[in-house]
Image (tube, rainbow, N blue to C red; front, side, top):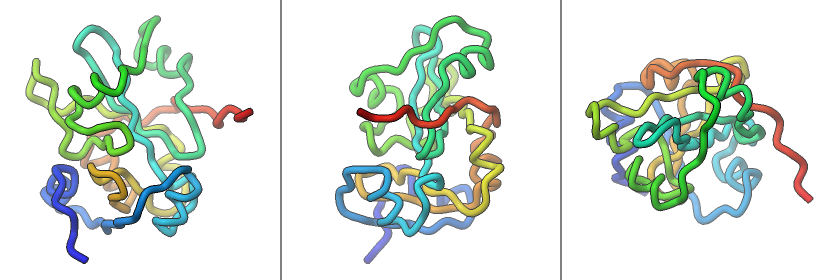
Amino acid sequence: MSTPDTPAIRALADTGIDFDVTVHGPVRSLEEAAEARGLEPRQILKTLVVRRAEGEYLLVLVPGDREISWPKLRALLGVSRLSMPDKDVARDVTGYERGTITPFGATPDPATGRPWPVIADALIVSREGPVSIGGGAHGVAATLDTQQLVEVLDARIADVTEPLAPRG
């Protein structure tokens, strides 16, 4: 099977870092995504779009087994309010629909022409093994070295997550 041609995969290739592309069918859970990619749920990264102010966004990389800690993220950024945009705004900001969002190949900030800032949770770099990030289309992912990921994205590393809240 050939490698899918998405803006994310092209952007990743342009970085020169090593990565493997996984193409899988629809998944309904973190566990299914991890199984399809041959990884642990903690190695799957979610890219979340956060609105800091009007027209100002950032991307937060969160391990699959964690969620954003809003108090930690607000304290890090020195703001009293943050929010997550709805799916249409997230698509407009990144060029990707929810479930496919990745910093790689995302639409840049129109005010600066530069990529949106990226914050990577500290657990991403402290845990062993590679990570998998969205490949810009449903069922497409890229697995790569954690250190290379944060370096090429110029990601700010900080403790910004907490364990997932129990569902029920």
